Length: 228
Image (cartoon, rainbow, N blue to C red; front, side, top):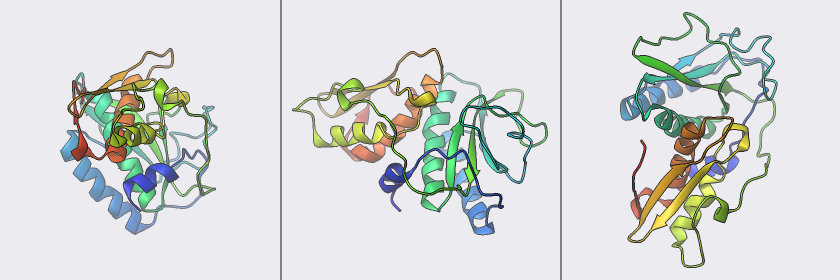
């Protein structure tokens, strides 16, 4: 499965089968997490067979049977939340490609002492529930039009159109899609976040930027004023 195929097939899953991750999946995830941590200067950690974080917790989307999750931790910086979204999405698409379901989780989980490490200079940004979903397949949800999240027009390059379309398939907090991509002549793109009462717009922009790159083809453009 290519990353573009993973983007099109991924959906947020909140109900999981009550079964442990297969050894091969754990190995693949650990290797990918180590690689992404080096690339993104993060401290992502895979937590296995831990049921307290989601147990008995009334949350948006009513999670069930979550016993495996990934904590996105990193050194405090202005770019941390953007990188958490960007590299978190990279990991989510990798998980999709090896047959696992996922869901980004903001506040609706408990931070369990001893389940993962976070240093004094680090911040826990986000959690990703992961496992074998009760249901497979893509479930559509309402998305904005390309012209609502970009300056796309009839003269825009084809790669820009594909990038925006891929970004619109990115998961965002309460499906808010508060991001914008501006095409600038000579193949440049300026990404900006919107404002929202729900927050998480920095994370959302990072996620959307990763999808945009996959859809547009990173060799076709360069970011201008990237927050990463």
